[in-house]
Image (cartoon, rainbow, N blue to C red; front, top):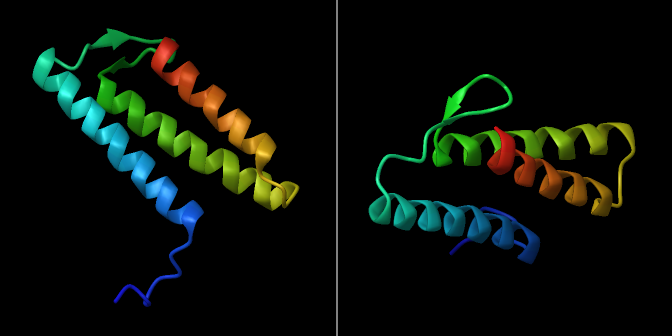
Length: 92
């Protein structure tokens, strides 16, 4: 049924992680409406959803740059992407 896409465990885990993060943000928005707006280091007023989007977009760029410059393995860009996500939710 899903043979049109090469589903692997890493691919499935990425999608599960993204949908899990969206679920957590939905629950947080229901419990504490308003999106927790704040002015971050980049000078932008961001909500939790904005910070999730910025962290996911930045993570994609980190992985693509690493693949273009160094290739495999991807453990170092994974650590960089996690640090970027923490930075986004902490300071952005």
